[in-house]
Length: 352
Ligand code: FO1
Image (tube, rainbow, N blue to C red; front, side, top):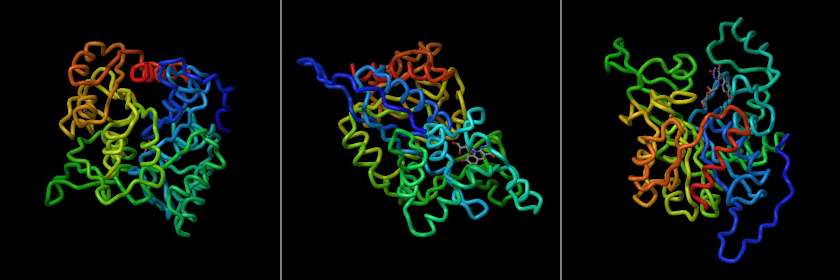
């Protein structure tokens, strides 16, 4: 079930005050982004985000470059992780897939030797992929399919794929047995089978240069009062969303301030594999370097504000020197209340 709306507060701005933001857009990856969004929504609906109306609409543009086809099914991990997390159907421990899951289908497939065994599809989750695959094969675009799936989950946001086009992240790794000395693997193989333990030599996002934003994405950015970048991977999550032609420009030239939350605390990521992939781009692994990688909106980048962890307070001056407002606050998403306080610090930074 979706998060219920709190009663709307009086939204009349006092004379001279900036009216409360009524329309938020977030660009999200999977587990980290979804957790951030759940805490943000609970603070938002409680009227606890400075400068934001409690009944503001939220549009989530999700990364689809982790998507792949497996056992004839189209699987969209980041869309599903956001949908299940905000709709109350996620396995909270794992952070992906359905709660109360069983694995009979995967066990049967393994008994046939029908791999890959390293990628687990739960029985409940498979129902989502069956519905999606049937609709995609009947000709519906991914955005329409996502809207149909969300009618069940009511995530309290409009969930949009970044594009309806097929886009897939592949990672180049060293392989001395290949004549070229390297081979590429699908992002899921790199992440799930290899656990990102092998250095990534390059990230290749197949189809990204020809993709177009899904219906509603540019419109949402043009009408936004605030854009949030959750602490998702800056290379393979937010980076691929920003790589959809036209999307970065819409963010840069849009009316809304853009505030992001660092996925890096100290010299490593909190969740996922940002460290390995930043290395592959030659970007230093620090909260300040990720902010400078995104760049200040005033200098052709995408950020107006950036939150770093309280333990990274020494990074603030360098981020501000790059033209980005910056604050150091606790960034661990231990529960929705702590995450909501992070979101409040983010809106405070750019809306007040
Ligand atoms: N992550 C794993 O670590 N192991 C899995 O077997 C696995 C299966 C899986 C199935 C459906 C789905 O939507 C997500 C799944 N994930 C699994 C998570 C996923 O690989 C990644 O966390 C994301 O792609 C990164 O955002």
